[in-house]
Length: 273
Ligand SMILES: [Zn+2]
Image 1 (cartoon, rainbow, N blue to C red):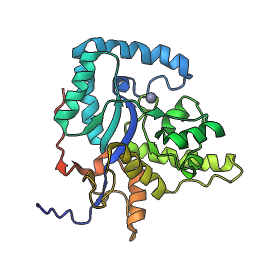
Image 2 (image 1 turned 135 degrees about the horizontal axis):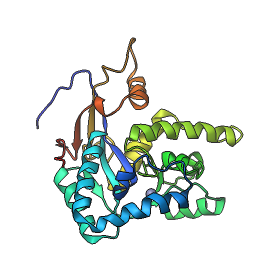
Image 3 (image 1 turned 45 degrees about the vertical axis):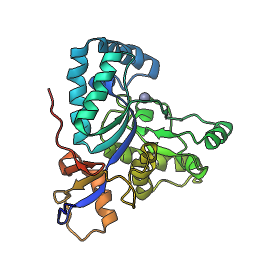
């Protein structure tokens, strides 16, 4: 086994993004002042119809995967279009990159759930992909994550690009924290806000369950990891490991990620266009 010393860097499990749309990558940041139906009709449907053109698909998907690599997402549950060739291409590109991209169906969002639905989700162990960026952008509301977790429903985090405006899980973690604070107020201070540690767990081990033993450094887990150099993050006093992680989540970005590993293998920058 090879031993590498990363000095004072932080080494954390890679991020798991449970729900995002590769064919909406070109729409990142567009039309998020619209409501859902209007947004779908103006941006999403016309864009996704372009994927009958394999050259267009290749151009966007190559960039998409490179950007996913950059932001430290090591596992992703990626939605494509109904175009067989473009979808096959996306799967091939993931294989080549060494990043782990599953192209399936998971339940997303779950903003408006009543007690009966929570009961059903708990019984069926439905996986919830919490996408606060998307929920806020399209005014869908705030998912009752504290209640879902308390009931034992598996929850992970997701960017839901391009209803979510960023591929970065840092951005999702921050927004998930903010909306959970608001949910706490709205619930008459009953649904306790999610701590950074809880959110980090959702973004790694909790979402990682979807892929098997992923998202933790415990024994028998696959080694998905990010090496974080946080020395540029204005640190003027001694911080605990948890505080350093907090600072990276809130103020860091892909520039702080020095290396990425998936299942023990170092992943180099994917070739792009
Ligand atoms: Zn979605």
